[in-house]
Length: 251
Ligand code: FPP
Ligand code: MG
Image 1 (cartoon, rainbow, N blue to C red):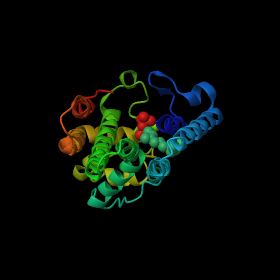
Image 2: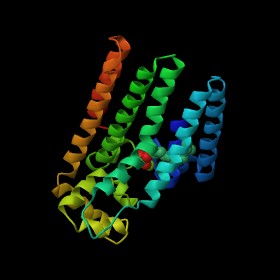
Image 3: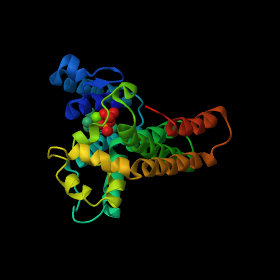
Image 4: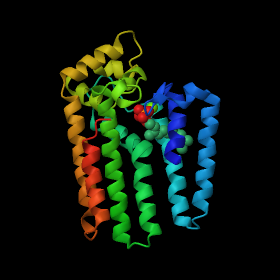
């Protein structure tokens, strides 16, 4: 419910017209109803959470809601960009911190909460968190890659959207390392006529897409490795399989 609420709000912020192959809620019902629907789902999710009567889990999931907003805020600000230089370690740190907050935190803390509710030992709780954190980072890196490589029809949501929204995600940051002319465009959020098209060309000429996929693979491998402390079981096998399914997803 928290995830669905965040997407209802996200489609308003992004002005998206489709979601999961259908008209998005903001198009179908308008911005006001979408925001209220998201708020309502958050309210109902909070009630369900309170009913668990576990204060550690309430704290974890309440933190997730704050993290989602912090991540979205970091994305809107999009600082840590010095257009005179190539992409620095700081630029990637900012991007990865934003990615943790807007995507990985929900998966990581949900996994952690499940382990806490199951009464697991501390090392398993920690492993569950690491699994979710790395899976979440890989998931969003691939999401940012697919925005460049898959059509809107196949994605079921807008494609090539990030540049149009002024966002420099991993493929563009990697491309910037090779093509310094991306710096000023990133700084001005691709706002001049022709910026998104030129940036896309440069990303295609670079190996930004491949480097993004490679980085995602490193995180999905770390997610799989975090499961090593768990005893063999069908559940563990399913979690391992999920890392591969996610890494190979096409939409
Ligand atoms: C999708 O990102 C959006 C998110 C992962 C989080 C959005 C969070 C908010 C709007 C903050 C409000 C939060 C709550 C809990 C109401 P994306 O735009 O990169 O992905 P997309 O291509 O699927 O739209
Ligand atoms: Mg969006």
